[in-house]
Image (cartoon, rainbow, N blue to C red; front, side, top):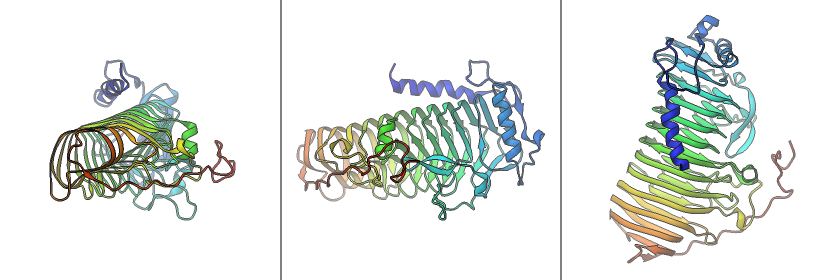
Length: 461
């Protein structure tokens, strides 16, 4: 069985977790990783649900009791539950009923400072509003809302440099479903799984002033039928930055994104990278509508100093409109921050191969494809555009590629050549206009002292 087939089956299997019969009637009779034996209303433990008093203690007590009794369900209904960070344990369902809201505290003191993954590195920061670590079989569902505090501005605390809380954050969780919810985040990332396996995000409405879902060094992830309206990447796939990410070597792999709608207001609908030092592979995006993007609808990016790979990316049956800069950009030369401990030399140049787009409809995108920032020492190996239709201001620009296939590209181009290339080998390139070569970037040098796990800015933790 292929890895992507396993990811698709995760949606069919894990999503049964959220198909339990009405609250209080227990779980569905099918074999479930979570079989609630308890149902706890935090009001019975002192929660007010009035949006004014902090209910952190009562909600956490309910979650902890479910975990220690082997499984259970915490139900929030009929109110606004103001809380600081709450941690979900194993075999636990957090059900936020329709009409109920879990509201984040405006006080940063209500969020513990722990090690968090931020921009590809482990650093001290405030943990997410709803979080889990080292757990298994967790479900968050219920048709209610999870809302961050508006008072927490920015992504980093100015005084300390500590990263602000994500809305939902999961580290090393095996078996996770988040479904049928509305989320509203402030300036930080909304949903951030790290080192998680067998994950389903289903039927979510994700609103916020930063990224929607950041999949960070995770395996077997399904994102299905979600509606994004975000002020940064709707979905971003990451795997660490520099030598830290390279040595940990945990890729993001086997990701399936289906039937989603995207509206982005600062970057891209789907971003891959630029934090790719653990590698990203086997990604499928199908039947999605990309309705607005501040830059390109799809942006795949990295830079020398990352190392690792981006490979086996397939996107098909997409509708693209409202993209300010264009449909697709590939940039593997200068995207994102250079790490203080980069992967040096030839090994630090990312290996990029087997990227396919097919059955894509574009409407008045300014640029169809911009793919000129590719390292001449490691050409992209395997790039396919097939059955692309619609209209664009400018066409396709490709540099430093081999095994390229262009077939059925029937897009009306307003100005300039339909295709321009330099150092490109493949099929369907007839009639291409010449393009200037891309300048070779300077070599990336190793840091001194050399990196070892546990180092931050050159000093051991």
